[in-house]
Structures are given as C-alpha cells and as structure tokens.
Image (tube, helix red, strand yellow):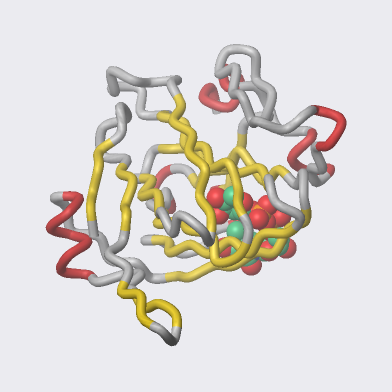
Amino acid sequence: MIFNETKLKGCFVLEPTIFNDERGYFYESYNKNKFNDGIRADVDFVQDNQSFSTKGVLRGLHFQSGEFAQAKLVRVLNGSVLDVAVDLRKSSQTFGQYFSIVLSSENKKQLFIPRGFAHGFAVLSNTADFFYKCDNYYNSSSEGGIIYNDQQLNIDWKISKDDMKLSSKDLELPTFKDALLC
Ligand SMILES: Cc1cn([C@H]2C[C@H](O)[C@@H](COP(=O)(O)OP(=O)(O)O[C@H]3O[C@H](C)C(=O)[C@H](O)[C@H]3O)O2)c(=O)[nH]c1=O
C-alpha cells in the first residue's frame, strides 16, 4: 500500500498493492497496522457505510461536528466518482481549501479524510457503489453540511450542473461561511 499525503495535512491518497493472476486479483483493502503506520496516526474505525448512486448524483458536502466528528476511509467498489474533501480546520494553513480525486473500481485508489473535513462525491460513471469506513458513529444531531456550489470553495465537480442530482436536503445546505458560524 502506497500512502501519499495531499496538500491538506493528514489527508492521504492510498494506492493498494494488487496481486493479479489468471483468476483475477486480490488486495488488502484495509490493514490496521499498515494503515496506522502509513498515516502516522492511530485510527479506530467503528462503522462501515455503503451507498449506490446513478450517474450525476452528488452527495455532500457533509460532516459531523464536535465529539461526533468522523474521519473516513473511502473507496469505490464499482464505477467512478470525483471525491472531494474540504479542510474545515480553522487552525489549518489550508483552511477552506479542497482536494479532489477520481476514485474508481479501476484505479482502486482510496482517500483518507481526517476529522475536521467536509466530504462529498459526484458520480462520473453510469452507477457507483461507494464504500467507506468511519472512526465515529453516525449522530444525526451532529450532522452539518455545505452547499455543493459554494462560491468561496468554488469546487469543480467535473460534471455539468444540468446532470447533477442532489437530495432536497443537500440543495438547502448553507454556504461555507454560514455553516462554520453554527
Ligand atoms: C450517513 C448515515 C445516514 N444514515 C441514514 C440517514 C438517512 O435516513 C439515510 C440517508 O442518509 P443521507 O441522505 O445523509 O446519505 P448520504 O447523502 O449518502 O450521506 C453521506 O454522504 C457523504 C458523502 C458523507 O460523507 C457522509 O458520510 C454521509 O453524510 O441514511 C444512517 O442511518 N447512518 C449513517 O451513517
């Protein structure tokens, strides 16, 4: 597994070692010791999530605040997405900056998003099965979010606005500025 830290401190791109043979392939998608060594931190994942979406679906930008903040290790089982992590850590030198990457069943890349980030993704393929590990439990009353087209963040989602499909909840999310005031 190769770990590359992004410009956002603590946020890493992981590239697994794939063992191919005449039957297909095998790889370790998660190994606690190798993972914690790779990101130089001790993370205990407690919840796995999975979602299925069709082309153009955009889920996010979401986060959980306070003691229920979640770190996430995300990957795509089938299809491809543009995955986006936004640094919400007010003391960070990259506060308000984002990192985006195409995650796909083809490239088998993963993104580790530490606590203190907002997360979202847009589906680039016809369908996508999205899988992620969280280091804190779901807590609906701690949920927060930022509107996907926030002017200050200016995220390029790589899909046209006409093709985007968002939940009514996500369409009503606050701006970056307003989300951080609460
Ligand atoms: C996140 C979550 C949701 N739910 C329930 C709540 C709703 O009744 C239903 C759908 O939830 P939601 O519309 O928030 O699902 P997504 O839009 O995929 O939300 C996720 O999208 C982005 C990409 C994220 O990074 C977050 O993990 C998460 O917010 O599942 C649960 O029961 N447990 C959970 O952990």
